Length: 84
Image (cartoon, rainbow, N blue to C red; front, side):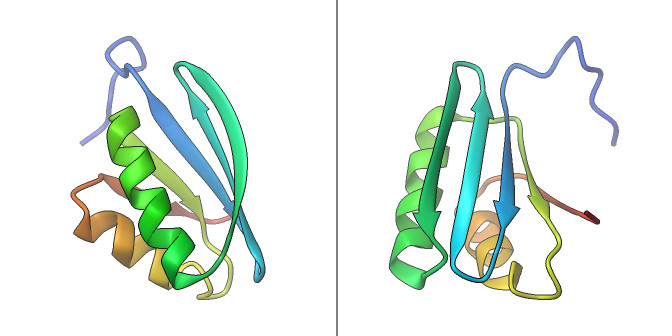
């Protein structure tokens, strides 16, 4: 399913590295960084759910994004893993 850009209300993007996750939410604009650790990922999932993004785009990073993608999907968020 492809979203029409005119119908997307809010999206989030996450740049993944071994130590941290850089998050950008576009509506309203917000940027922040959290540690790439289990507890921080769980808190991030809750924070993102509160923002209610239509989808979350996660940069594929050789598998280190797997725990993040799993946690976000388990929390009910629509997640798309993309190649860098």
